[in-house]
Image (cartoon, one colour):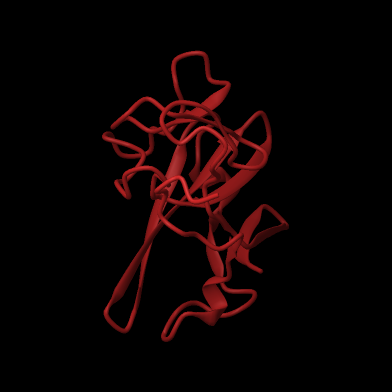
Length: 131
Protein backbone atom coordinates (compact mmCIF):
# COMPACT_ATOMS: atom_id res chain seq x y z
CA UNK A 1 0.00 0.00 0.00
CA UNK A 2 1.47 3.35 -1.05
CA UNK A 3 1.04 5.86 1.78
CA UNK A 4 2.82 8.68 -0.06
CA UNK A 5 6.18 7.98 1.60
CA UNK A 6 9.39 8.43 -0.31
CA UNK A 7 10.62 5.09 -1.64
CA UNK A 8 13.73 3.78 0.12
CA UNK A 9 15.75 0.62 -0.27
CA UNK A 10 16.24 -1.64 2.73
CA UNK A 11 19.95 -0.87 3.08
CA UNK A 12 22.40 1.55 1.48
CA UNK A 13 25.75 0.03 0.58
CA UNK A 14 28.18 2.94 0.39
CA UNK A 15 30.57 0.78 -1.64
CA UNK A 16 28.09 0.80 -4.54
CA UNK A 17 28.20 4.61 -4.89
CA UNK A 18 30.26 6.01 -7.76
CA UNK A 19 33.35 7.53 -6.13
CA UNK A 20 32.05 6.41 -2.71
CA UNK A 21 34.11 4.68 -0.03
CA UNK A 22 35.01 1.05 -0.61
CA UNK A 23 34.36 -2.01 1.51
CA UNK A 24 36.60 -1.88 4.58
CA UNK A 25 37.21 1.88 4.38
CA UNK A 26 37.18 3.57 7.79
CA UNK A 27 34.26 5.95 8.40
CA UNK A 28 35.34 6.94 11.91
CA UNK A 29 36.41 5.56 15.27
CA UNK A 30 33.85 4.54 17.89
CA UNK A 31 35.67 6.94 20.22
CA UNK A 32 34.82 9.84 17.86
CA UNK A 33 31.17 9.57 18.95
CA UNK A 34 29.93 10.28 22.47
CA UNK A 35 27.27 7.92 23.86
CA UNK A 36 23.82 9.18 22.89
CA UNK A 37 25.20 11.31 20.05
CA UNK A 38 25.88 10.80 16.36
CA UNK A 39 28.43 11.59 13.70
CA UNK A 40 27.21 12.91 10.36
CA UNK A 41 28.93 12.11 7.08
CA UNK A 42 28.21 13.04 3.45
CA UNK A 43 29.16 11.27 0.24
CA UNK A 44 28.72 12.41 -3.34
CA UNK A 45 28.00 9.97 -6.14
CA UNK A 46 27.86 11.81 -9.46
CA UNK A 47 25.06 14.37 -8.94
CA UNK A 48 23.59 12.73 -5.84
CA UNK A 49 24.51 13.65 -2.26
CA UNK A 50 24.08 11.03 0.46
CA UNK A 51 23.91 12.25 4.06
CA UNK A 52 24.22 9.55 6.69
CA UNK A 53 24.60 9.45 10.46
CA UNK A 54 26.18 6.94 12.80
CA UNK A 55 24.43 6.83 16.18
CA UNK A 56 26.08 5.49 19.34
CA UNK A 57 23.75 4.32 22.10
CA UNK A 58 24.61 2.14 25.11
CA UNK A 59 27.66 0.70 23.37
CA UNK A 60 25.78 -0.14 20.17
CA UNK A 61 26.33 1.49 16.78
CA UNK A 62 23.58 2.20 14.24
CA UNK A 63 23.84 3.86 10.82
CA UNK A 64 21.05 5.38 8.74
CA UNK A 65 20.53 7.71 5.82
CA UNK A 66 19.61 11.13 7.24
CA UNK A 67 16.26 11.41 5.46
CA UNK A 68 12.78 11.23 6.98
CA UNK A 69 10.63 8.80 4.92
CA UNK A 70 7.66 11.16 5.35
CA UNK A 71 8.95 14.52 4.18
CA UNK A 72 12.38 13.80 2.71
CA UNK A 73 13.97 16.27 5.14
CA UNK A 74 16.97 15.61 7.40
CA UNK A 75 15.95 14.13 10.75
CA UNK A 76 18.01 16.52 12.86
CA UNK A 77 18.15 20.27 13.26
CA UNK A 78 21.28 20.28 15.43
CA UNK A 79 24.52 18.61 14.39
CA UNK A 80 24.95 15.18 15.97
CA UNK A 81 21.53 15.20 17.71
CA UNK A 82 19.04 12.63 16.49
CA UNK A 83 17.53 11.25 19.72
CA UNK A 84 14.42 12.50 21.48
CA UNK A 85 14.51 13.58 25.14
CA UNK A 86 14.18 10.12 26.73
CA UNK A 87 17.06 8.78 24.63
CA UNK A 88 15.02 5.77 23.51
CA UNK A 89 14.08 6.77 19.94
CA UNK A 90 15.51 8.59 16.96
CA UNK A 91 13.31 11.57 16.15
CA UNK A 92 12.52 13.58 13.04
CA UNK A 93 12.66 17.15 14.29
CA UNK A 94 10.47 18.34 11.41
CA UNK A 95 7.29 16.40 12.30
CA UNK A 96 8.17 14.59 15.55
CA UNK A 97 8.14 11.06 14.10
CA UNK A 98 9.83 8.50 16.36
CA UNK A 99 11.99 5.64 15.04
CA UNK A 100 13.31 2.54 16.78
CA UNK A 101 17.09 2.48 17.00
CA UNK A 102 17.63 -1.16 16.10
CA UNK A 103 15.66 -1.30 12.84
CA UNK A 104 14.61 2.28 11.96
CA UNK A 105 10.89 1.46 12.17
CA UNK A 106 8.67 4.50 12.70
CA UNK A 107 6.48 3.83 15.74
CA UNK A 108 4.81 7.25 16.04
CA UNK A 109 4.16 10.18 13.75
CA UNK A 110 2.99 10.84 10.20
CA UNK A 111 5.10 8.02 8.69
CA UNK A 112 4.07 5.33 11.20
CA UNK A 113 5.11 1.92 9.85
CA UNK A 114 7.75 3.28 7.43
CA UNK A 115 11.47 2.76 8.03
CA UNK A 116 14.65 4.74 7.89
CA UNK A 117 17.11 3.46 5.30
CA UNK A 118 19.92 1.59 7.07
CA UNK A 119 23.56 1.95 6.01
CA UNK A 120 25.78 -1.15 5.78
CA UNK A 121 28.60 -0.83 8.34
CA UNK A 122 30.69 -3.10 10.52
CA UNK A 123 32.80 -2.51 13.61
CA UNK A 124 36.33 -3.91 13.91
CA UNK A 125 38.93 -2.95 16.53
CA UNK A 126 36.97 0.16 17.59
CA UNK A 127 36.70 1.38 13.99
CA UNK A 128 33.45 1.79 12.05
CA UNK A 129 33.97 0.49 8.52
CA UNK A 130 32.05 0.33 5.25
CA UNK A 131 30.49 -3.13 4.92
